[in-house]
Length: 485
Image (cartoon, rainbow, N blue to C red; front, side, top):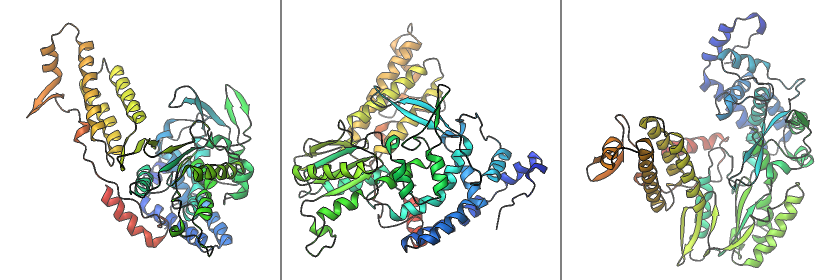
């Protein structure tokens, strides 16, 4: 069952490595790794942490796991972005050789390449650390052994960066909390200031269940900016494969802290039936929402959260952490939640609509000299992605607004391309009429999609008690993926 691991790597020709990589049976590779991950998850559930350590050691030294780690970093979006060593793994031979080289023994990560990218408000910039390909693969390898642990111990109401969970699940759970007439009326919108950059290294090393030496090396690798080397005293790599899991584990326990305070029965048990203040929490990465039936309770909870975060080197963002009444509405994960006449309506937020309009405008602008076909392909990608994200909420009005906006952009696009042509000539050249619908932007082989043609389909909330690494839950996840595909 084991993939062939050459004993004398230097003696093989590059073509041999190409054949070995291209001939891998990935289903078999994933099956072997998944079996070990399932054993880790079950050992965590039973509290057998000595066994967890042994299984993690086996997994991180498994050649199959190393192959999967290399595959992940060479197929994701960052596969063409090198670190400070300018190395990329582009050929099959390079990928196979990289899997052979991966090892914890004598491992020393290179410093990150630091870049700064603009935040959505365009006033500040976010630091982005880019590890080398080798370091990314080492992170992916460690994540294979850490993820079963995190999935087993994380709060069921946490949705960010978790296997088979999404923003739609977080939004649906929040909708279910707020949609009833007797639902809580007050909401605490929470945002953690520079979460990835400020997490305490001491807390991570004491609480993250993985190889401590490797963890320390990941955290203390440093970064290079403008040809200068800087030490990393806190935080984890924003852009690292394993960083979101670190963040999830850092915030784990927040939900239990709140529930122990507000869900406790007279006999000391934690039960939702004792939740007289209707306190609920929904977490997605470093954003969270807490509900309650009065403002005073949320003020108390905010103080509890501040204390919880301080132990981990974190703090709440004063600007983004606010207490809001549901009738005024609030934004969460790109949607606006608000009650109108005691009825909850969820729709794309104004900021989300504004962002996609800016993207569409810039796309049309840069394609002023390109063929119509290329512009249609790119616009269809943007429209499809944005509509798929929002198609489970009340988005028809926003979809129609986007269609109208695109039509206006395209009319201006035709004028800029042909300023001396008549209105009728431009319309006949770029637009067609199909049945009762006019002004359809169409080329010889393709036509522009209409956002309003996207069907609204309500999202089915994930069963939060399941674990993707438990064998008994695999059939559920398989059926769910088939239903959503």
